[in-house]
Image 1 (spheres, rainbow, N blue to C red):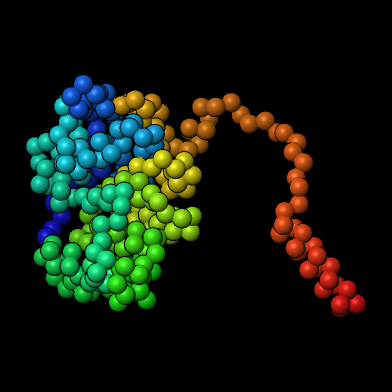
Image 2 (tube, rainbow, N blue to C red; image 1 turned 45 degrees about the vertical axis):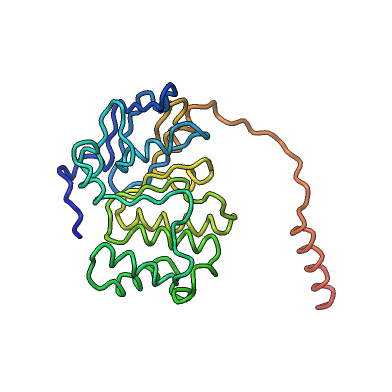
Length: 264
């Protein structure tokens, strides 16, 4: 399956204007405007219920907007949904992997479902890219949370979609697993993939995003780089804080002192 070429290579990978969506009497989106540059990581921040997942579902053609315009990879989500679907991959909040199969078998299965040639070669390449080669033959049920998430993202890249949506990809992961996923996301952008990331973790956006937007009560209230957002607040003040020694300081001081005495 070939990915449709964008109609304009200079246009943003994602273009949204005046997006509105309501569920009965509840207005979730009240006029969202967003542009995401090609090959960048764009973080969409917001509290629960802010509308982040609704935006992603509209862009992925899973929901229809009430009003507004949305284009992905140059294609209108309302009038060219098939082209949009062939241009994207969506990774939800929980890993969608088959625990009975091995990691490699999961990848081969998806490649075959997409009618791609050499599914084994594709699987081996993705296992290598996401540092899963040693675990490729193991059942996914034995994987850690971080490994499952990396496999999930690897599966979403089969077919080389130019745009990837990651909806809170580190939900429920421990700190070590989150860092593993961060490395995987950075590799996507380094390879030219456009990533739209939704998250509630501010440190995640700081680590990954080229640009950050905050969605609040159905509207984008700010959009910029991390430095631009920091300049919205007054400069920080230098405050003297007495620093207590950490356990590491104590350990190194005692071990170092003991070693010096023995050498003397």
